Length: 280
Image (cartoon, rainbow, N blue to C red; front, side, top):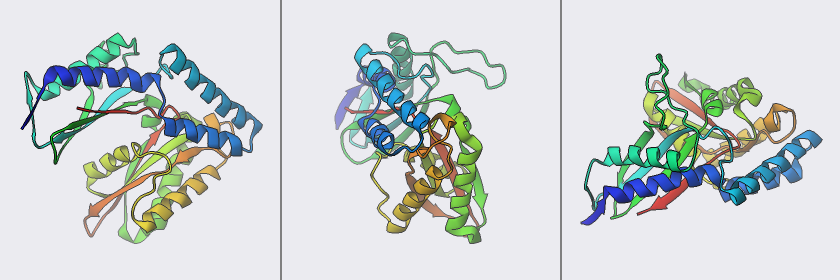
């Protein structure tokens, strides 16, 4: 049994919060570069060049890539042979977010009550997803989720007979309705299957997958390719100003589902597709 003190949890999560907001992942930067080379629209090409310049400025000057530093979504894989000591695990996660957003000078964007809408002042509470896995390590991934792209996300129960074409239609409809409001070029996380709560979780997990890594099932990998092509054929383009680079990537995650249902969820991630991982 490995012992991990909550102070290590707080320190790790805090650091991930500001690192995620300062430094865009390399797979996203590579996606910008590929899109810039192939973008047909001169305006779109200029926008992609500006996104790369912005990312470099943020990296060099250690400042947020985007002013919307998001609601912190924290994914944690806890090894079953780990014992967390010194305090409450979930409290430690929240303290890590609180510390990271304060020390990183990140915008606080969370209201405590969805109707009264008073800002909590420290970007907590974060949304925490915990999974128990084999081993004696803890893996943390912080996903700062901006409001614009999250607001454009959607979920629907299709009839089973609508099949793959129904899934494609719903994903494309969601992207078209989002237009430029989701700050493209986007990453389009898609969940298929499960239950009402599971399918949205699948879509959220999907956006964590690196660009270029396809689903292990050939028919799902093919659907990813087809959706990426069709989304980029919508003409929405970078920042919604027209072009051929509406999406950088369309990762799909699936799960078993009831015989009567075909749930589908789309979780859009804006071009500021920030994520950072660390392992204790």
